Length: 538
Image (cartoon, rainbow, N blue to C red; front, side, top):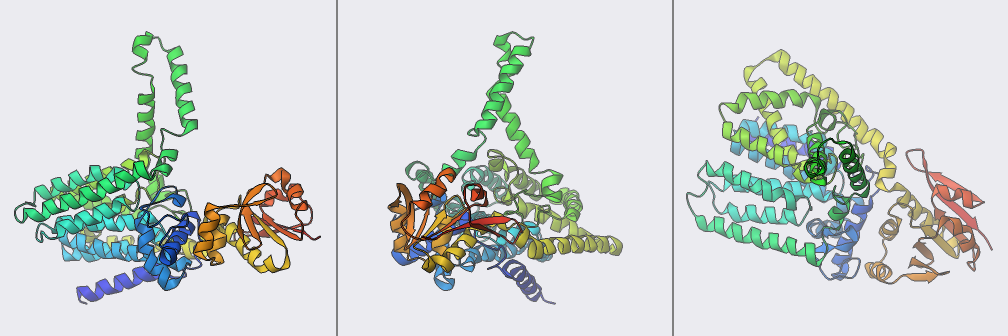
């Protein structure tokens, strides 16, 4: 069978694995997906984000979200509407693009045969399939980074690709924040790799044009850090801002300084914040290479790792080792490049916390390439027994992965996808004509974004309610006709509702039951209590 036909089949399989039942699995949209699609829909119809800002480069409602995923989602929102498919299809297509780029990269660095195998291995990668099935900005960023890497390597033959490489890297910076830390340390490695291949032998003008493009986009994204507070999220969660960790380190330092027999003028060099934070960083960094993360449990957040299995298949550990050893002598520079790529990829993740399938996803392509090399060696040697063992290993793990991803995860982990917010919105829509007031507690996960999305509220109304709240019994609410979404202290819910002049449906958390009578609790697909409904007729 010709290479093009094989590649087409691989891509088709990859597309099916990533898109099947995408509207209902995951079962609802979580907070980031909701804000992305609300911003994209608002820009499509008004030219403003949901806060009323005209074509921003940073989206405040996403805690300083970079712009690329939102803007690139607009055509799909126009095509499919403000739906799950509208926000997720870009990530699905990113997955297909990554499969194709792995073919191109494998072909360029090694051979066409290696490229085809790399595409096949990527198609069934649990890490990439999981990232493809939700509106993850990190997945688009991985596609753009991989495109930048391929174009830079290919530009040795076609110099006009240097500007495209720079554009891809620049857009990566505008897609996912951790790449602002990762790319500056990764690009020198890429330049080193190409330096040995004579990458500036001709048409230097394209290379210098690329430098200008990247600097412009880099300065633009850097300016957003200061102008638009694009790093709010990172500032809140990095290891230096975690209050519990800070207190623990300070207590440990003080304790050790009181115990040490060293004079205090020397003790301070061994027991200090710098040493302790370095330990935390190294520990977090090394966890990215642990068996627990790569093979056993992966990212412990079911939103990022829907099958709650390792980020790669266990059999790939053996293939990676075979690939590394086999190509070390014959293609050492490339092996060092791929190894360096793996080593540098989790750098930004370690500054935040434990391994993370989104922030560490740049590790995936070189791991897949090493796995591909190992598989190609086994195929070359025609060791039928070994090949059979590898095939069975892949098949068994893929079957377990698929059954968890497609049949168990949608129900088991529905709460991780803000399902209570979707359920509360549905309840409000069904009942709003039967009551004078429908009050929804904003303590329900992401409900303030879920309601206007699932009810397809006019973007102008959404902008208005985000900017100007409605006062009701001295509390601020977002108001959509007779539906009010806002915060009420749980101990005051009963008093607040009884003071309203009319019939009331209150939708809140199950824990509100201890403050109310005459309520009904609805469960989610996970068979756990999701929301509470309280009725008050007057």
